Image 1 (tube, rainbow, N blue to C red):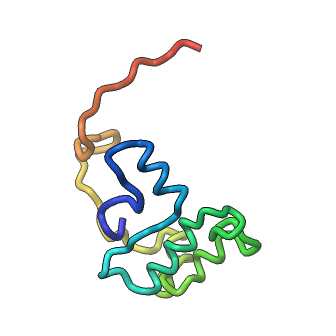
Image 2 (tube, rainbow, N blue to C red):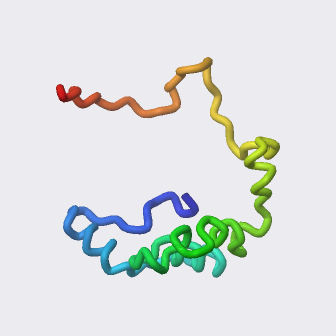
Length: 108
């Protein structure tokens, strides 16, 4: 979300998988060192070293320097105003989403 594209991408699926398992990430030059550090820990190949999966759980993420200005309690209590609220015509309005073809449902 910080760059507008995923951390791993390729034309062929097998290439994409290779990039994911290699764990090599090239960050855009405008990313701060704090953001790079956070993403490095979130995209860690080894699940035992990945933020969110360590002894401190989600606290490793929430207390990371990149989130230092984030009011987690205010977010939880719905006191923080959303930075972007799409305009809708009412509940169930999906006009902000691209149209796509539904896959047929399979019988179980």
